[in-house]
Length: 198
Image (cartoon, rainbow, N blue to C red; front, top):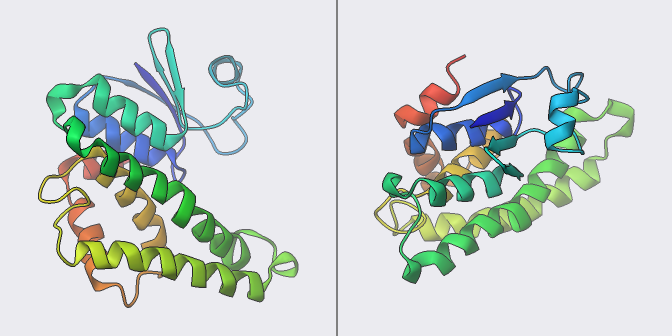
């Protein structure tokens, strides 16, 4: 099993997921973005994107899909819930990608990534409002739950922990005390520490 990886990208979450399930793997480190045209990456993922996971004949792209795949691939890790909880598991995973991450990306683009002349304060403010609305749902949920599925850590917490780490670096979690406490808790896990140690 090998993971095409670049630091400070969504691939960090995939590396965390690999550490959580304890899967032996080869980490193929790429410089972002200049090495995304490497032939071995393009052979696995024609879009030349990281993360890309190669597991024998199976190729999995997209960080959230990789996380969910690994939880199922390594059931002994206990990170994929029983069938009666799967609807919540999938709901939280897709909520991260559909309801929160687009707003977070828009804030990032218009406050950090784009050249100043191309940034829009109005678009950043609108995105922050959308981000806050979505994060409010998580805040309310975590007021009475230790993890997203209740009292047990699951792979969906890796997905959210990765996303919230990005938000925390941008100082976007102020006023969301339950979310901040949750983010701190999941990012203190040994698997996360191993995933970001080098």
